[in-house]
Structure formats: C-alpha cells, structure tokens
Amino acid sequence: MAPRVSIRISLRWLPDTASEPTDTLVFGVGAYYLDLRVLKSNNSIDWALAGERQVISTDPMKVRFNKTLDSLNMTEPDEGDFTKLPNGDDFEIGRMPCPERGMQVTDYEEVWRQIPPVPGPKRAWILESAGEGRKIFVGRIGGGYIAMGDKKGETFGARREEWDKGRMSWEVKYKIGDVDDVPSVADLGAEGFEGEADWEMGNTVIVLGRGYLVRAFELLE
Picture 1 (spheres, rainbow, N blue to C red):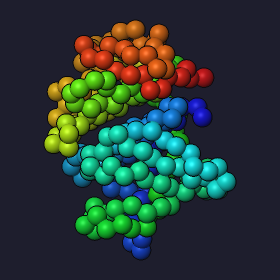
Picture 2: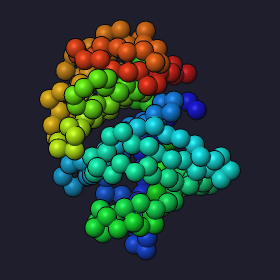
Picture 3: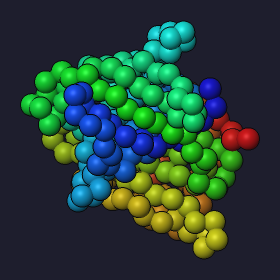
C-alpha cells in the first residue's frame, strides 16, 4: 500500500451522536503508522499512538493496530472493520475502551478521509528509536512531519510540523507536552534530516545524535 495521510471526519461512541472534537492526522507508511489526535478545545493530546498495522482480512477488511506507543497506556491491540462509503471515505467500526465512560469497552464508529500529502520531498518514512532510553517514533510523508515520545508511561509529548514550500521553512502546528528529546525538523532550519534521502528500510540511522531504526521508507509518486 502506498503511503497514506488520513484525517478523521467523525467519531461516534454508540449510542451517542457523531462528532469530531479533535484535529486528527494519521500517517501510514509500509506496515507502520503514527496517529496524533489533538483536542480542538485546548490543543492538548486526546490520544497519540504509533506501531505496526496488520491486515487480518481483506474481504471484509479487518485491520489490527499493534501499539508500541500509546499516550493512554492502552497496550492491547485495537481491531477495526473497514468499508468504503459512497464518497470514498472509510467507515470503521469496532469496540474499544472509551475514556469518557471510565474505559468501558464500547462500540464505536469512525469516518476517515485520505488527503494529499503536504507538498515536499517525494519520500515517506517512519523511524523508531533504538536502544535504551525514551521510546520515540518519528514520521514524515512529503512535507508533513509527526513525532512523539513516551517515557515509560510517565510523560508523553508530540510534535506536528508542516513544510511551507513558498517560504522554504517549517511551520510548527503543535508542540505538546514533554518534547525536549523528541526531534523537531523545524528547529534545524533545513528541509530535512541529514542523509534522509539515502535511508533504507531496516537501516539504523542517526538523528540528532540518537540511533533510530528505519521501520518504513518509500518514495512518493
């Protein structure tokens, strides 16, 4: 599957009505994903997670999301069933703990829409920190960038940045929580990290002095 950038259109915890209280952006590259959901009301993290995406079946489409990082410390995998809506959006149903209901397992419905990547270099990748220390995931698709880090369930932080091709600089969309050691490409004053055009899946690369595993790397069309 080609790299995907998706936004969420709505969430419904049954039997309530659908709404969208967050600005949610998801990157999918290869078998890995980054999912950052920011509350519109106060720009705090509603939920942030990253890990591996596993297709259980294709007819019907069922996907399991294995989580290496989870800001809510919900480490059990999530599974969702997907169908296409007439307008091309993806309709997801499943069951998972609902924070608004004391983590009671609840039926949910979500609507997702694939959007074009922010214009930028024609590459997409997801990295996972290697070795000891804080677990961090970093991802890029074109001119979009997401990074998040967890410190053994104690503190969590995330960044979302976008490349402005006209100004030739990065715009910080969100900088939330404990992000001191979560890499920022905007802080570099450059279009990307050193050597990233030559990365290959499976390599260990150095980003701002720390080793990362290249979990996924693809070129954009």
